[in-house]
Image (cartoon, rainbow, N blue to C red):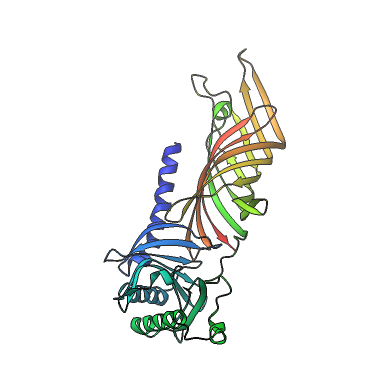
Length: 377
């Protein structure tokens, strides 16, 4: 039964991921890989164009079609250079700009390789009024910065080459060089911020499959949970973040179907009523799996109200009636699958847990399969 539940769930999640990748693939590029970026709330996608050129895009919200088209136009511009050979290319986004960072294989101009003068590569900012460059250049063991508006490859190379020659040949005074001094480590991409916690609200449906002695008296059940979560909570040591955890609190309603005693006596008794109101606190450790899909092993503790009424047969062929209406603790463990499906805010959720209610009369054990959706704030 568990395999029959999990296989369709995995199919749904992977199918949604492929639909999201199609947004880029409609432009003739393939999505090779999706994983978290270093910037909070940002996904990194590795893309490949029809010529086999690979590049990366980092975006918090899925770029609209005009921005995707502009990104690909910039990619074609950079890979189409004659004198600059691009090795690695990545794009970042904010509300008004597209940023491009690149490392190069070689930069040849006037018969000279200029790449050693540009150890950090080249960086560009695309704005509404044009494309701008700003990058570090090292001449005679001193860092300077060059910035300006980009017009074409040869003009850019002439400016780089002229600056190098002027500094090496002492044609620029210290006063003139002041405006070129590179006195910080900034690059023209959005500043990498610490990953910040994000609140999430989700809901889902549950399928319950009792096991053990509990499963002999109670049939499968159904229900639902509403969950409030705080995701991406950093765990630190000596001011260094080691990993991130998700914390959540869930409540809802579960009921179990009636199960009557069968002829061979394998069922222990008749059920009058069976429902629970779970209240569960979960800790999850999210792990990126494939194309934006996360698997999160989880541990949970709870305090649950349960109403259980059943008649249990004993080995002495007597019947014992039990009626429970009280709160009891629980523990659980499982795995949850998360997949962002719209602008890194709407997520599809699924998972499986093993739930144990520690009841004095009989421990209630059941698999809990879930499928739902959530919203990240």
